[in-house]
Image (tube, rainbow, N blue to C red; front, top):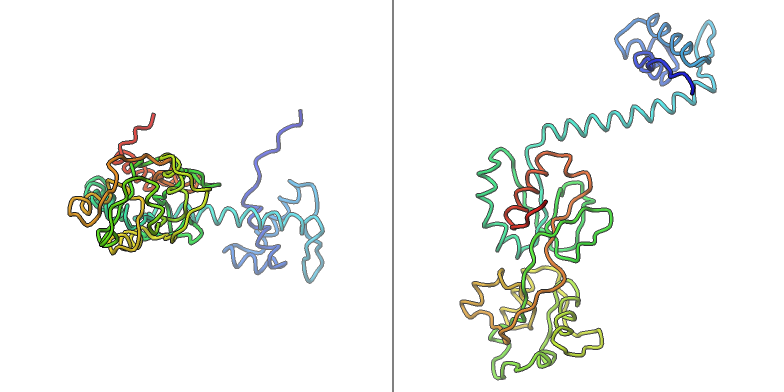
Length: 299
């Protein structure tokens, strides 16, 4: 087994990196706030440690040797990673707010009613709810977490089940003006169907009701849950409603359920975030809080 090397002389490495960048000991010394003699001494000690010459020296200048150039490139990569790590830690330490992407319906009908609870628990942490009607996306560098509807499969991201709601077809009275309410599930195929994000939920519902669709349905696909709800309320079509989120519209008669039974879809709301999110105390605190609010008990 080889003998372990003595501790890497980091001060000497730092002096070398500056000297290599300028290929000038005097300029490196000015940057580091030391004398050129000190830089030269540190470089010589590093050469002794590595067992090779890092600079070719003459009376007027110093230039990197092949080994020095190779080592300089390695040092640049290491220091770049170190600088990023320092910035990340500083940003985390000074962070006072978090950003959560949320759709209009779940945001207004569920999350907004619990914000006082969050404020009571974490009065010094700012919470920014970012309107996110589309898919799961973190490339903007601003969004920390998202409440997303789906099957839980978002490659490269952590996804935790959060809320599972029952659904039922809902219709605005204006759509039924002059016509009867469908008596059977298959009768909905004679009405304009409105789909949220894709056709999956309707296909799943019709399948559970024993209605043959051939795997495709007509209708309009709408990404934004608030736009979808407004379309149904104005009589533009029939959609599957997430029952707890449209309770007030059902009670007021703005929406009608043509069938009394409900259905639990395979998809649900998840809390989605990058794998390293739990390294940040504020994000972990929000995650624990919202899981508790949703009534999901983790082991």
